[in-house]
Amino acid sequence: MRAFTCTTCGQLVFFHNSLCLRCSSELGVDPFAQDMVVLVDPAQRCANAAIAACNWLVETPGTLCASCRLTRRRPADDDHPWLPAFAVAETAKRRLVFQLLSLGLALEPRDEATGAGVAFDLLSSEHEQVMTGHASGVITLDLAESDDVHRQRVRKKMSEPYRTVLGHFRHEIGHYEFTQLVGRDDLTEARALFGDETANYQDALDRHYRHGAPEGWTERHISEYATMHPAEDWAETFAHYLHIRGTLQTAAAYRLRVDGPDVAAIEPGVIASDPEELDPETIEQIIDAWLPLSYALNAVNRSMGLDDLYPFVLRQAVIEKLGFVHRMVRKGARPGLTSPRRGSGAVAR
Ligand SMILES: [Zn+2]
Ligand SMILES: [Zn+2]
Ligand SMILES: [Zn+2]
Image (cartoon, rainbow, N blue to C red; front, side):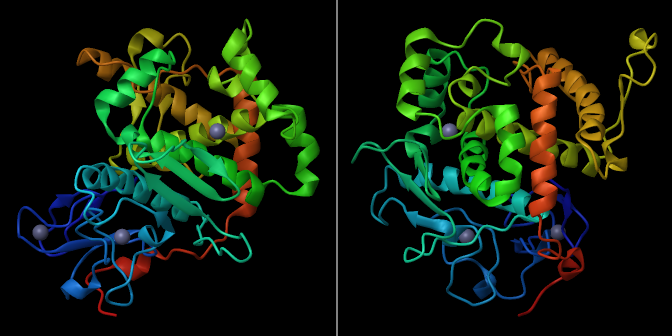
């Protein structure tokens, strides 16, 4: 995520802010400018501003923003117990949509007639059966995942080192992006790296929950779940690609560099990272910047008595898969979706 300032007073503000706490300017995110702007008219706000805690701007008053309009089903306006969880999910989803835009990957709302595009169903499993997952461009999230206690309980039960709402979205959109980014010509390479994505899913699921991940899985997979099925391996890898790119962008925005510790100086260069300089053509450039930063951030977290920020190990086979994702993203990116210049100062349109 990039850093933002209030253009009225220069205060540092954050992606979720809708108000400058210093000068009380009303703020909103213009996703296509990839910037935070000062509102000139409250009608610039998304129609879901209150219900989804949405701080994004719209071009036409009374309409939904580029993120909210992707949501197909959600709790009803009077479903008060679940509306806060819905807002948490939408907040994570905006981060996803914003990042994809920055990578040149715009999400279009699903056209029910043609099945093109993407739709989000953000629903409570209290009322109906809701399975978090992806099917033909429809991403479903059980809103119970917005609840920290529930999510941590499931995380422990599944022995996962990491489980967040944003992580769910990054994984599920990975399934969708496979259909968008991996062309017919790329399938041979994709299958060589991840396996055959058309393999029987139910068999794989049964095997995974009966026997667990195969021995030595960390050599080839980023997570235990990735071992379950080639499609899950791709989705997990895609999610990690977004984790890494997003966190490197944040580090660059704050000019966060790693140039140490000295104890590692026997391997000069290995522990240096300058994300600000990063305009990555290759996955190696990304990984070279990422590893030192992740070591440092993990150490910072442990200093606070917290778990590792990035509790994963990237082996060579996984880096090769990330490299394939990187090439697919670069190939599928549509430049010109965003223009930083549009975000300079207040917008009136
Ligand atoms: Zn301000
Ligand atoms: Zn919105
Ligand atoms: Zn999946």
